[in-house]
Length: 631
Image (cartoon, rainbow, N blue to C red; front, side, top):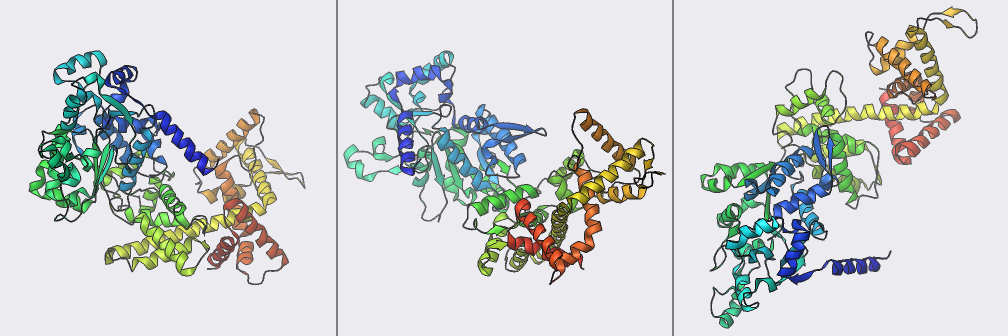
């Protein structure tokens, strides 16, 4: 479908969604669809919930955030359940400003942008439909037309609570345009749009000396005073401040704590009473979610000022720390690269993972738990199984430092260093070593990193490099072993024959001489030791293998090389250990002979076809592993 056709379809869809009718028509609609009268907080909560919720290990994962925010599931669950869910139920938390606090590039702005874009789309759905008094600059709730003395009767008939009073402008319009006939007031469906300033507002602080409070609450239109005769005539007032335009939806208060105090005082009555003062009018009702964000140092400075105590109790602080999972950090980098002009550059497998290992290490606090080092902690956080530790240990580690993740290296720094390496070296392919080298060089230019932290970060680069050495050897190991498929299968069959004889207390028969032999303990242990099976655990492991073989046989399946992951890994490692000298010679020789060249080409082809390398990165990997094996 062409782009012009899509634009036409979009326009037709917008026309189809439009609705206009009298207040009487709106009440008929309300009986049919009571959710159209929900509050701003309730609408945000249902928008998130309707996108889908999954339970995983006793925690909720919200699909609404899953494509943009990674590794902050705990923070998001707390935000949704403790703030949005409670606010949707009209509990007192809806009378609070939501303040997202966290380090730079931690996802605060992304989260707010997602809520804004989400509301724009949700208002076009049936469940997210919003209706307002037609012609009202504040998109006022039509139910404000119901007089206070009839609201209890309305609740008993419709089951909907009404909060807020009719604005001065609509009060005047009701009398002058409709002769006081509430049922004739025109109502229309509106669609949230930040660009059109409908239901979504953004306020950003600037110079306190030049910024006007009118940016928040609107201002007098002096050109109309002569026509209407008074500054207190609502027709002579522009209801175009961010608080006016964000009514029924949400307002983002960027860097709220940098604002001049006079701007913050307007939020006191808005959050607590649901109204604010503008011009020479009575209090104006507004129903909106106010989201602000700041960093930790500014927040600490704010709460230390006694003059701000009144605002303290009207703020709910939600921490948005850095992600602490290597696999999720890797997704962040992939997302940022995909959105940039670097997407054409080949990034070798594991390059981003190694960068993520370094970054996560800078964010983790040294564990207090005995026997756990930073690497083990990192692996446990990432959901890996670490021998001797379980989910209870993981929870204990998380409880040690409530503020963990509020400091460390941010994702933008890593992407900047990758960009620097590509641009400076004019690379079309980049590997893990290029990334680590660029990160290391950048530490010296990073003004905000202290000397002590720089030394610590250099140690983490060394750790990440060692992790990459292990990964690189394993990659080449797999590629070489696959070239020796028959050898691997033969070795496994030999191991299984011996395991079966050992478990059944039988003897083996030599295929050449026919004489009976005891199971080859040396062979079995040489394979099992590759994956850390201890002498005490060998019997259980062998019995587990035999049970798996029997289970396959019952189902009519054949137990093969890929049927047991740990056994496959052990066979690969054993074979690689036996082939180490061949690999060493093949990967490091400067003038390979014909057979060596054939083997190198086979391995490179496998690295490209099955492991995601290109010819440049595959050759670099082989050369690097060759140098490691020759040390």
